[in-house]
Length: 490
Image (cartoon, rainbow, N blue to C red; front, side, top):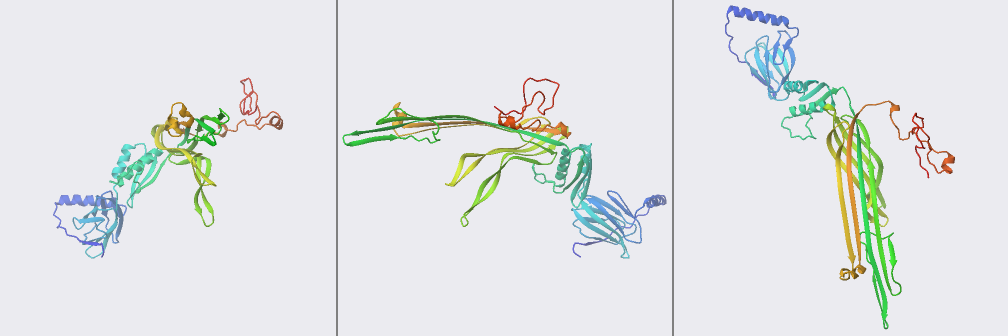
């Protein structure tokens, strides 16, 4: 019979009661019998089966390690259980038995009377006990209506809460409740046995503004002297040439001056470069609470990924470059916002470029990237990342021994000096936003007007020049002196 188990009912003879007590018990049994409207009456831990000529079928959800009391309408001789590993039956008497839930699963119990007729078929579904979890939600989240059910070893959460953060909190609590002992982290919660059907009223929308500001200052100094001497002694000629190298760069664009002519010449090569680079990127992106959003302003750069020697072809794949932003906001209680932000600014650089052959050189990609999780109030700003970097390189090249001679040694050496300073700051500011009417939004092209042929051809203007009024061309009550607007002319 497989896992089926037949239990032989063993019970003691009922004791005799007094007449008054017997009458009282009969009266109570009659009242209970009259109050029954279904074939079986049950609460959380008790079932009383009504006497019937047909078999009574009943489905019961029983918590693990919980007990159920079953009262039969007549004496049972045999009890058959489908899987004793899921539930265990203990016969207290011929009409009363106890059922204990052992492991999660489903089985059934069939009761037979002395005539081998079936009295009842009780289907037992052993599920996680969710009474304590429901009580926890009522105590810790009183303003939410969370209904907890157990189904096939899972916990089903339904109802309504106030915000998305409460949804995440309820799912997290339920996951830890059903998966006891599971090793989890803040980013990897074990919620595989939790079915989330919770809803919340407001779907808050979050706008995130990220400011990426970078300043780069560079200074390059190069100085070298080339010495050339030629002469003769008798019939022999003597010549000396010194061409100092510049290991950190080229002196193209510098100064080269010869001080002497004839058999002796001294050429001074000097170069000084000072540069400043300012990078500003301010991506803005809006999404609803709990949903991820991404943004990329830039392009895709082709990068060789393989080479086929048979067909002499190069495989190309594209890498995104530009300003990228990805974030997932979750609105918490009190208007606070939890942000998981990943932002990046990338650009093509010739520094550290890789030359495959004379016809193919792969440039490098300069990347500034930050990934973090923070919590901010609406309108609050926080520095997500910052960088201060200073790099100094100095190289002296020349002829051994001669370059070390004081004063005269400068004729036999060259000096390279490079100093780079970089300062980078990434600032994030989230806002809780609501949609507005279209006329309340400002557009970048508001007030733009292309110059006509006369002003474009003869006055050198690209945009039309507006008089008093705002940038959109509409007049205002405030008189402003002078012309303003989109002006780009000489």
